[in-house]
Length: 196
Image (cartoon, rainbow, N blue to C red; front, side):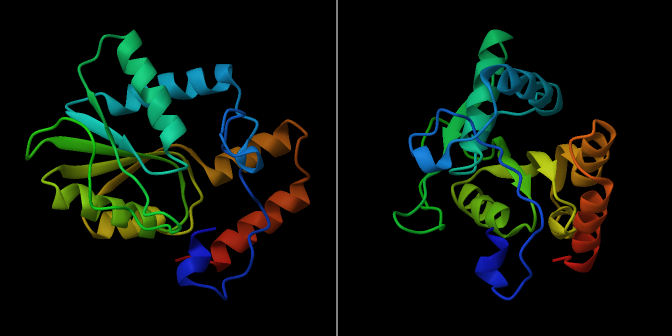
């Protein structure tokens, strides 16, 4: 996890959320999110994203499939919101200073990603967007791992919006018989003990 870039001694998480699609160009990074699931996520993101936004951008690389889906949802509903692009510097997690796409200085930009643990990668992207004249107030993710990232953002004046919180997903998995209660309790104990 990116958490280990800044906290290399942090304990390994007892849970990994694979929020990838089978279409990733790297076979090692393909995941289980089907087209139908992504369509449903896109609709949910659409309900949460399309207020007075001028543009949106996916955080590379994990946020891009969600931004792709949000773009398809916007097109399907005829919503006038522009897609922008960020890029990583080759061989690193750092984001290049360039923002690709058409926008005007001062426009409101929504940052989209798969999940949040801590806010570091979101803050790097926000710095690039703001450095290019865009205004970022909200970040939209599918899952909040509830390890303090939302509080970090809020402290700096940004709002995190998530479709799910990790404790909600764990409760669902336990209820559906997909995860033993003991494992869910282990994950929640880890989350409480490893706040950023």
